[in-house]
Amino acid sequence: METIALIPEAQLARTEFRQRAACPELWALLDEVKDPEIPVLSLWDLGILQDVSRQGETVTVVITPTYCGCPAMAEIERDIRTTLARAGYDSVAVQLRLSPAWSSDWLSAEGRKRLQAYGIAPPLAAAANRVVKCPRCGAENTAPISEFGSTACKALYKCNECLEPFDYFKSI
Amino acid sequence: MSETNRHLIDYTIAQGDDALILGQRLSQWCSRAPFLEEDLALANVALDYIGRAQMFYNYAVKLEGGARSADEIAFMRDSRDYCNLLITELPIGNFADTMARQFILDLFNVKYLEQLIKSTDSELAAIAAKAVKESHYHLRRSHEWVLRLGDGTEESHAKIQCAFDALWGYTPELFEMTAAETALLASGVSVDRAALCGAWNEGLAAVLAEATLRRPADGWKVTGGRNGVHTEHHGHLLCEMQFLQRAYPGLRW
Image: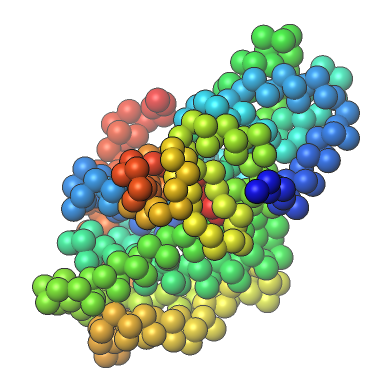
């Protein structure tokens, strides 16, 4: 049976905001910047890229951290600067925006597909209470091993069908 | 500097101190937890707290006009200048001691941060909105562990009961207002801690009962952390945490 994927409202609002943006070329450029821990996700896919704007020679990039203590934030900021500098933008301001707080609902639809293909089960909608499917065999017979995993944004699960352990992108 | 601003800085730094000291304590489990998954979990929670401390300190730096950096606040103050709650500085003990403390504090933090979200200070409200999501997540796990240990084997039951008994006298401090907090309450900046006591007690009693544990009797209590009067453990913790910055001031990775 074909299922129609519904996207969370927050994600729809993000997509519309990006479509209205004044400098689409800068957004496209920043799609090259990936999460250092999960290299299949761009900052946009991850939902941490909030805004990109240009005032004269200066480019301002607004990002929201996933977790308070995520050690990748410093590296992400460096990667933003490097990528923009390569394209000739030397004057860059990176602003950290805490509110509204990041939610795993902000992950893009493409990002979710890429996570799955990469072997990480994508996050369920924050309000949902559904089963986590095994990203390898698709089985629904899975169980958590630990609420925390190899990085701040992941939990550790196992599949009771194919017996493989796998990462689950925490829903928050 | 106005008195209100001084109160706001003191309040913000105390929030950061609670988070940093607890985060530092939790990080001491790294490579020593009962099993690998728990090792990762404890280190992750520690990281959340250290990140939370960084956000509060960075805000304090802004309020102070950049007179000192967040690193200086963390690494160059002595024990008497730290205002963390005493319960955060106690040694990690055994696994039951650590999980009992986490549960006590996770439950408190969820209730506290839910109020701080409504702060009239937009920066504090934003930090709270970010942190409360993590605290909800932490609570889910510490709750689970209290049930497993309490309603587990005879030994696990005895150990976590003993942990709650030993920590009990440190919990009244969670509900004591400092002068700065009281002053900031009128303008809706801070949170009325005393008002959270009832809901916290109810929540805790329900979980203890479910875990077949006994609620410790009220009696003795220890306070003083907010005034910089700490337990003997505090200096040892700072000694380890601050060593590098004390030996090589201004060192960067």
